[in-house]
Image (cartoon, rainbow, N blue to C red; front, side, top):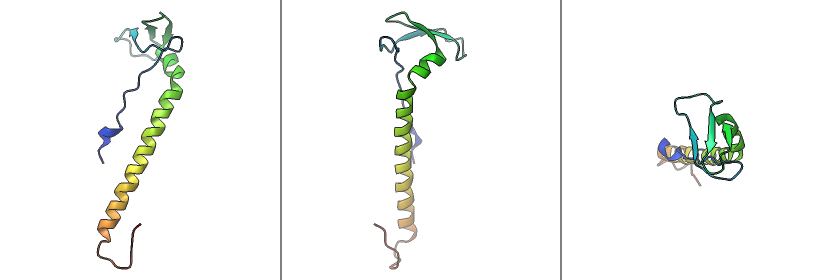
Length: 93
C-alpha cells in the first residue's frame, strides 16, 4: 500500500469571511499563537481556527479512513487469493 495517497492539504477558512489566507508569526509554535485573516483582519488563535474548521477536518479524516479501509480489504483479498490459488475447495467472490 502506498501511504502517500492518503496525504491531504486542507485549507482552513476564516469563520467570518471564508478566506483562506492568514498572517502569523512562524517562529511561534504554540496553538495559542495569533493568526490574522488577510481579508477581514479577524484575529484568533491557531487553536480557535482549527476548532472553527473542525467539521471540514473531520470530513477529510473520515474520507481518508474509508479509503484506507477499502485499500486494506482489497490488499487482504489479493493476498488470500494468491495464497489459496489452485485450491479447488476455496473460492472467492
